[in-house]
Image 1 (cartoon, rainbow, N blue to C red):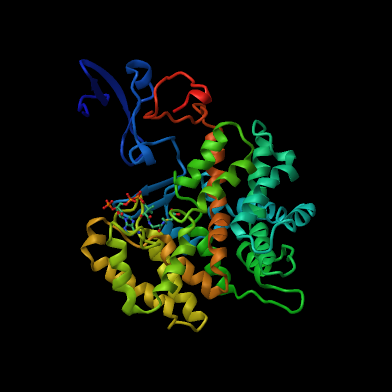
Image 2 (cartoon, rainbow, N blue to C red; image 1 turned 90 degrees about the vertical axis):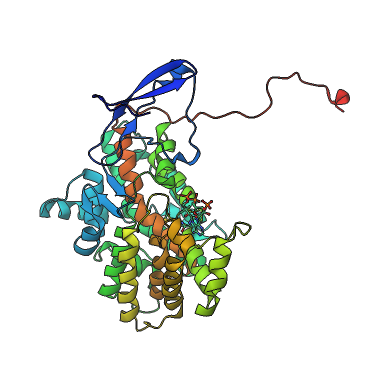
Length: 434
Ligand code: CMC
């Protein structure tokens, strides 16, 4: 029961005992009931699997209003950042809290650019993977291995090392993702080029070969940059919370980001972009859409419409709106406006949004619904979709990691449980077991 008197408190009643819990207000968004003392006072835990009603930290980086379809980074709407800014500027904003001045941006871009190369020994390390390994598996291993190659930036108590680790992660992730791709298709690794911008350099490392020149189309580089920007951060999602939980034990930054990559890979999270494109291909033609919508609605069928639904957005995902516009632009540029997958996606969206099941449950296309179509048109195989998400989200993970480490109330994350197993019983010798 919420108490209307000031300061706001909530009262929890257990049997005949009542406990007052303070209510904390943020700068915007729902209030939170501070239950930190609940267990100490009452001996009871709260139960919230999936964290549907639980704020696990305080943060000033990203704000989402899921009912209104709003996403703000440091207060700036994602539509404005995607339209007017660019990825490295958004990285600066997320990391340091404000948009950079001209010289600050130049300095930041210079620092990132000077860290794009990898320790040469990492090329040998990467050659140990099977060629048919998924690029996410390779990336996960490579990022985890960074703590072995860059141990001069693993001391989290040293602000300088934290800063160097942050810049290294942002700078090297495109190199790592491109290497994972090149390795999986049996082509030589391409070194980063510091004369190219962040997105153009990534495209060059993915698509150039020693045998012929490759010129990065600036419009494609812009589209790539926008995809990075749209994925840069998303407050306390599963992979970010994984990074925070790993970091709460004092683990080094590379280990924490590797943990985030592992979590992102799942199809309910970053793996949805690959799963979505595979689903659209499987549907193939518009006449098969009702069959797949029927399956998504069938409680006895585990199938879900990939790229649909979101834990927080219950109106629309603003990233999906920008992504859909980008899909039209990129496909037009590439001369594939009549791309059959895009046609199926648009028709599927139309039919699903007219269906009471999706309307009533507030299920809308999310960021992953259209991103795969753009990436495929650019020439990426589906297995690279989630690595590109991981590359883009690295700055979000790193920003949240840095924020957490400077939070004086930081404690190791340690959820409790509702135990439903056997209570204490005596060990039985093997010959005496029935
Ligand atoms: N297709 C069909 N039914 C769905 C879908 C879907 N895509 N998503 C949710 N539902 C139904 C679900 O069956 C449930 O129905 P009921 O209340 O009758 O049991 C209801 O909607 C609520 O779903 P939920 O699983 O309790 O919701 P959640 O907040 O735990 O899950 C989600 C959110 C994103 C995991 C889920 O919507 C989903 O699995 N979507 C498909 C995967 C996907 O596109 N993921 C990308 C998310 S955005 C990018 C990212 O985070 O990485």
